[in-house]
Image: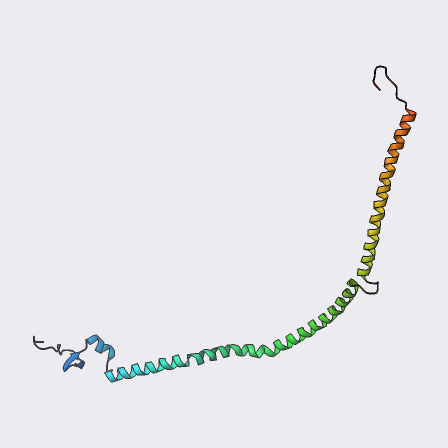
Amino acid sequence: MGMGDRCPDRGYRQYLHYRGCIVTMPSWISDLLGGVTLVDAILWVILISIIIGLIIKAWPFVRGLVAFVGIVPILLKLSDFIDDTTKTLEDHTETLSRQDVQIAAIHHETHKNDGSSIKDAMERVEVGVAGLYGEIDKVNITLQDLQSEDRRLQREIDERTQPTLDIEGEDE
């Protein structure tokens, strides 16, 4: 290559044209590419770009298809699930019906009615107990009165049966 010559050495096997000069590729690139031309490389790049674009566009469909394939076994078990759920619902409905009857009986016993309920009986017991408290208060008052009277009588008996001796020199 001369001083004024802008084109590189032409000793390589493949040549590219660049601004009127022949540009050669290094031998390792030409060995790697073999007989691939620039047109071939551009076509491969376009083809790969199209494939990548199709994959990107088709990905939501592929993802949906994969999800659908995962749902298929679940859908096959759906009828068994519905049958089990129906049986369980029937069992629970029967249980709830029995519980409704029991709750009605409990409601009858815990709310006022014609006097035969537990609530009515409890109110009668409470009234009776309140009356007993009043009677006990009266007995306590009478007991206190009797205790006071007993002490007074005991002092009187003591004074009559045990006379006190007067000691000379004591002030009365």
